[in-house]
Image (tube, rainbow, N blue to C red):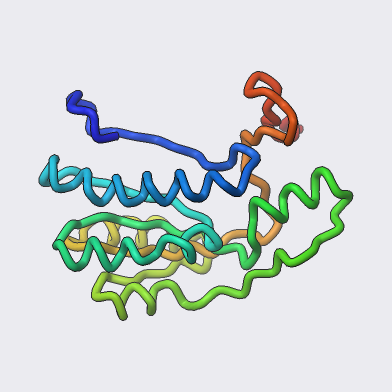
Length: 171
């Protein structure tokens, strides 16, 4: 993301089958905020699950402190989604310690000094995203999603990248 090509774009998914990917994701989130120092006027949007964001939301404070207009979208399903998905798909739905009642992320953003927004219904999403992107400073958009919607692709334990799960076939 911080290479000096002119694309100003980066993409990363930490759903690679290991919770340790969170450490890598936190580094990328920090790098995304830092990216704005080298590319003033660029738009950086972090898309996070609620569990992941709880571990990295301090970067909102960093963006506020240094006046960087980073945008954060939090997909809030009330679960530790990656772990829940594994338990559903590979452990016959035997859930253990995955309920994740979340704080009000929009209010936390406001407490950090960022703009806080929320979309609780699909019809609210477009306007909320437009408001987030229009805002000059850092902003957090909490998007409430279906609790058991799965995220793909994912790489099951012990499998190689070419064996990743792409999700159920469309009907």
